[in-house]
Image (cartoon, rainbow, N blue to C red):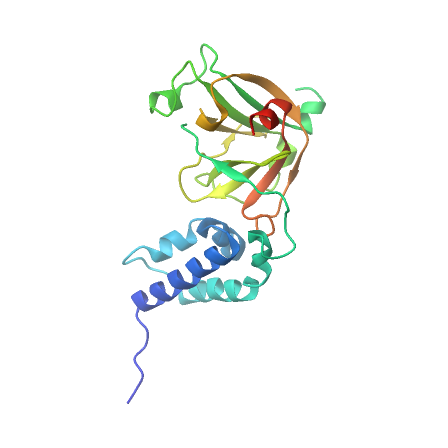
Amino acid sequence: MMTPHPTDNDLRNALEARVDAFCRTTGMSRSNIGVHALNDATAIRRILEPHSDFRISTYQRLMDWIERNADAGTAANGNGPADAEEFEVLDSACGSRVRNVTASLSYDQARAGRPRETAKQGRWSAGQPRLVVGLPAVAIAGWPFPAEQQFAFARGVAKVRIVLTDAGGVPLTRSRSGGGTFFFGHVPALGNEPAPKEWLPFRRLDPMQAGGAVIEIDSPAWLRAAS
């Protein structure tokens, strides 16, 4: 008796089970896996959609990548030689020479005349301070993530991180100068006391080795005090 070939649904179920197990073990998100395996943050979501078309070769590349990296990824979840510092993802509602090589971080009120799309969406009121993180062009040179990729803000003790997320985050807004900005809106965990913009050292991270984090920035004094 011939063994029946697996259906597309069989392959989807197998992939979903393997991806979810890998995410639990490593702390990586589906979009992060897609970026590393296929250079496409939306690949896994598209494949898992019912009745979607996908190539067997694409499916196999994902499964092969997960198999190869199952052990390496455990470090990103604290089960191996990864970071000693723990990071808490915060729910949000929402020129000079030094500026070319540093990131900016502010928690200030919206200025008159600035776009208020986030406020219009109800994620924060115009009178509340909102978290804004700016990156210079050098920080996002060769940025591999699609425009729709979402990011979250994670707070440590002495550092903060920008991390990949599948939902509930914000995209990177590109500027004409080549840099980019994350408009996180109001963050209840940071309170309502505004803080001015500061220019801070940063470094790019490999999300595979840093639990999905892509940028790490030194915390300003006001944020360390709020921890």
